[in-house]
Image (cartoon, rainbow, N blue to C red; front, side):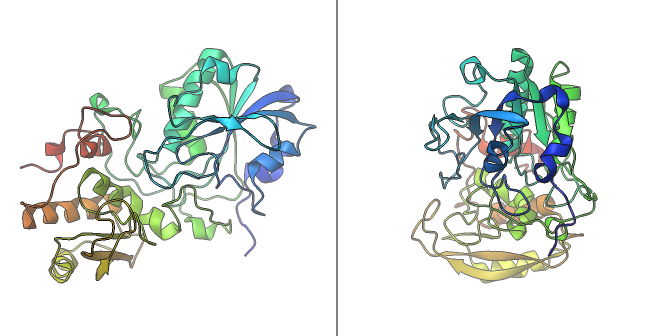
Length: 363
C-alpha cells in the first residue's frame, strides 16, 4: 500500500529552514523513528550533511534502540559505535537534557512516534527537551507524525496539577487527540513561550485517520506496543499498571489481554459483555505471563476484541473493568504502591488518572 501520508522525514530537504543550514543537531529518536521505506531517521539525518550536522542522539524510555523490555527500566548513555557521537539517555538519572548534553548544539530535533495517550512518556521527554532548549536558547524542530488512534476522539479531560508526574507533566486529556507536533505547539503556548519552535508538517493526514489508513509502516514505538490494536486499547488498559491485575505484559498481546490468578474468566466476561460498553467484546482467556505480574502463574481473564473502534471508549472501558474487579474480588484486588515513573508518594493509579483515586473509584 502506497503511503497516503507524507512524513517530514521523507522530504526533509524541502522543509529544512535555510537559517538552520549547517546547524549542529541533536536528534531525539527511538525505534519507530523511520521513514516510509523503514529507513531510520538517524540514517536520513546522517545522509543529509548538506543540510545539517548530526552531532548527538538522544533516546527516551525503553532506550534509543528500544532495548529495555519492561517499563521503568533505566538505561545509560553511550557512544554510537559507528558514528562516534554520544547517545544520551533521557530515561535514567537525567530525564531532561543537561547543559553538558546540549553543549555544542544549535538545534534539538524531535522525531518520535506517539500513540495518543497522556501516560505514554515520549511526549513528556519532548516537553522536557523543550524546557531545556528554551533555557539554553536552542531551537527545537519537531517532525510531525500521525496520532495513530485518530485526532478526533478524546477522553478524560481531567487533570489536577497537584498530581503532575512523568506520565503527566502538563494538563492534557488521557486520550488527547493531538499529533506530536500539535502537542509541541500546545506546550510552547502554555508552558514555554520563549522556546523557539519549528514544527515540520505532514502532508495528507486527516484528523479522522487511524494509522492503518495512512499507508505508513507500523514499527513498535516501545516493546509492549506491538500493533495498532494495542494502541487502540492502551489509553484505558494502561490503568491496570496502577493495580495488581496483569495488563498482559509478558504475553504476546499486552494491554489487550488482562487477568489474574484469582479471576473467574467465564464470570468476568459474562458480566462485562452485559454491561453495555460500546464497540467491544470480552472473550474468556487464560494465560501465563513470562515476566512481570503473575509470571509463570495461570491467570484467568479476557482478551479485549474491539468490534467498532469508532464507538469504543478505552478509558471508560478500563474504568468499568476496574470497578467490577474491585467489587467482585475485594479480598484480592489491590492498588499498587509507589514508586511509579519517578513518583514516590502518590499512588500509581492517581498519577495515571491525574487526580485522587476516590474521584473515579470511590470506596
